[in-house]
Image (cartoon, rainbow, N blue to C red; front, side, top):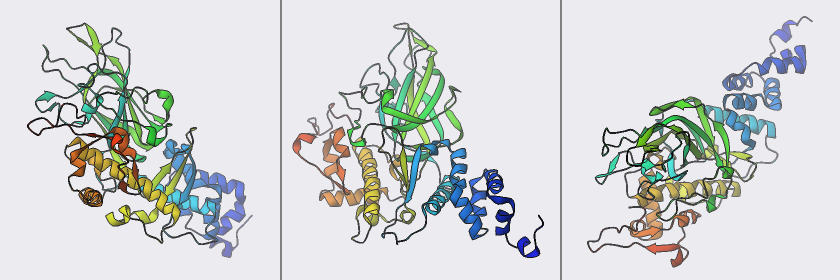
Amino acid sequence: MAMSKQQQGDPAAFLDLVGPDLSACVFARLHDPADLARAATVSRPWRRFVEGNGFLKKACVRKFPELAVLAGAVEVRRSPAPSPGPSAEANEHRIYSHLYGALVPDARPAVDCILHCIGASSTDNFPDETIDNTLEPQDRVNNRFSYWSSAGQDDPDVPETLTYRLGSDICVVDEIRIQPFKAFFQIGHPIYSSKMVRFRMGHCKLPRRSESFITDDDDNQAVIADENYIWTYTSPEFLMFQTFKLPRPVLCIGGVVKIELLGRVQKQATDDRYYICVCHAQVVGRSLSPVFMVDINDSGGNAILKHLPEAKNLTVTEVVQDSATDSQEWKDALASYREMRHLVTLMNVLQEGPAHPAQDLHGDGDGDALLQEIQEMQGDANLLQQLQVDAQLLYLLQDGVLQLQDEDGLQAMEEDDDGGVSDNDPFA
């Protein structure tokens, strides 16, 4: 059927001419989400057609299969949404359009996203050779070798795992770096590497506030059991190098990364058993919070993506304090983000080390200002450095203020006669 001159100048006539089924086949061949976003701006009929069929979401899931875990997407505004608002299809299209824009590499440098260690499958001399040592960038700390060591095995095929919590529940991961430990104190300076390595990303099924930390008395074996996690990404197996560039950027939804060390190559001469040792690990990427956040409440792994477009330019004051005019959905989302940011800052202070790259999740360089806010709210600038906080207490962060509930949740920091931290301090 020939098109009239008026129809030739009207893009909407294309949909009427070929019909919805053939039109859907044409739009489905646009695999780049950016092309679908542009197509939706051609005319209102095209936009309604693209939105109504969810083409942009489908294209995003093809590029980032981890997005299949999302059961829905909602937009969270500071002010209550007007009624009636845009359709659910229009909201979903807009959210995924912004999400894809955030996933495209930008000028911001990638950083180490690890917040803390969840646990290792085994440890030889716990706690001296704990997985926590892999967060140190040097192989020597205070004139002592710093590394994690597995338990010894007679079978070289026994694998090991290292599991980490990232500083955000939604991160784009580009590469992972692992530095095997070279034992300079042993004859021949052997390197206790694995043969192969594989990576998994996903989320923990346990409630966030029940997740524990490694301490001098607990290596967290109960938490690292594989049945406690849902993995949405599994990498190919790589030969053991120090830097592993992933085949594509991976969206880690849930903030948990497991490093699987497959096979052993080095025996220890003193006991003739195989070991794997790692002195440093990094998960390199960037956080999408607070503009994007996820709620994972379903033990089956379904998650809700939350888009906070107005969170892009939040100041420290706006992060710390709610406004009476803010919507309840906005307050709930910011409370979750605020809790994670305070946890990051506290972890850095308690470990008494240099600022961790994951400290500034917002990307605005205001980590010091946020710490100052926390100290001022506590009324004592030295409080965080004077207390040794029980690991579970770190999750008792509510409404932007650290709630110290009772003395049973704290253990006074023991000091030596010279004023130094005692050997009982797990964060020293």
